[in-house]
Image (cartoon, rainbow over all chains, first blue to last red; front, side, top):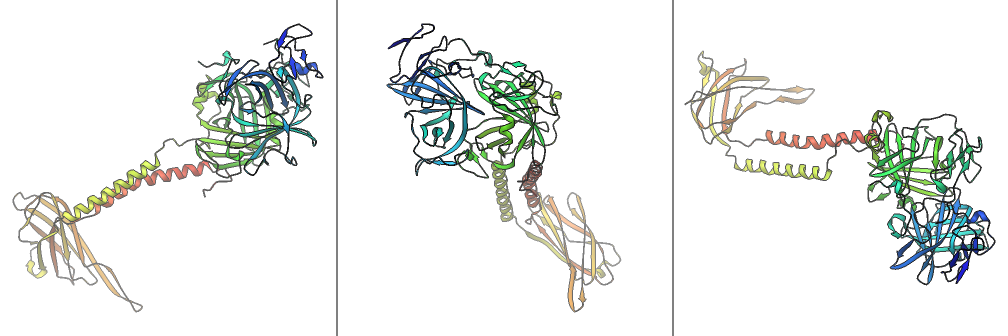
Length: 207
Length: 414
């Protein structure tokens, strides 16, 4: 379906099966969706070489980055890239050094959440224990591109990331006791993944 | 992409506006004008009491391990308990990520984030990774004495709330930082001041002077320990085998024996033995002398002479034997036998001139001459020399390791 920016008139063809938000790439206005502040639609540059339109391969299937949610914490950040993955949606969580692929959609967090802090283990099952490595309040959230529904659009949540040596990882979004969602996935070093159509920083090249 | 969002921050003190080089990654910085440190997403700010000059200038670029990095920030940190200080340079290249150069007493380490630190899984005092088995060198809390430039974290807040674990396996270092909100890990390696200077196109004299052995500095010479042990053991076994062969093949033949009595001198100064034959070329000769001594001594000078060539081999020998009873217990000292060893004596017919010195109580002696006897002195010298290098190596290494660990409260060295 073709939709148009109400400010600049630029046309967009919705590609995701459950598009929740479209931000105009030209004038940073909402093309689809509502309730967000204008500042939240201004995506800052953070030297990420992934961008909307970047493609890649995960588990033998192509994906295309459609949009980004940038979560700013006091001491860290996460880019949550929304990707078209075949007929499905995949979230890709990127930090400075690691990248996580989250195929299952957002789901209510089913485990005990008491006394979570960095360094403690989260027991997902008898076989799967994850060590909590990040517990930070999201203090700023920004959007760009086309996105699937995100459960906490205003960003007032704590972000928890926990992983294990087997590469399992979980991103938990904790707003309050009754509102905890999580993404389950696989984490790896960002430099081990090949992306195409990325930004390059030629002024830093060494050759 | 569309029009870019320009990121700028205003100093909370002087309102000077800075455009950070790290863009949205920069979470804290110091004001270029007034030097105040502030966080961009919180109200935290700090004014440092002392200013430190970085050896690597902020925003200068240098190549480390073939990668071009820019110096984004500089921090001086102090361990809270023992109050030693070190300096950290925060480096960045968007194509490869962040890195750190850490300098203490002119010794440098280059560190990068490392997500496979075993402490991410569970605590261990000796984390083992592909680089080796690491030992805990320091566990500490740090404070930031000074910072300038930009950082991708609140270095004051995050440092002061974190416990730091430093494990080493020279030349490597593993750092782990743990706070209530974050875990972080870094793997580093010792880097020589010369490489730092070359990488940043600086004169080495402009870097802090190097003092002592860096705690991750590799030894100035290294030896493959297993190779050293293998060579030593194999050579020792070969020496044992060679000695066994020499023993088995030695003839050890008595070629002469005679008894001499002082009265037979008849006023002369020497005895002359009859001639005897020494077989086999360049073999040793052992002369054994025996005298019935009791609280006495015997000395003689000998001259082994080739009958055909008059080639002379002169040697002396002295032995003494004392015994008695003291407080009801018998004691003795010395021996009533002595011997002399002559190596590489050519074959031929020989005799010996003996110039004895008799005491007042002993007036006789017996001499026996043996050809090609087994002997061990060369073997023992060889064994000593074979053990000398490994012993010196391990001694040197122990000394250097002791020096390396002398600042650590986790040292296992005395």
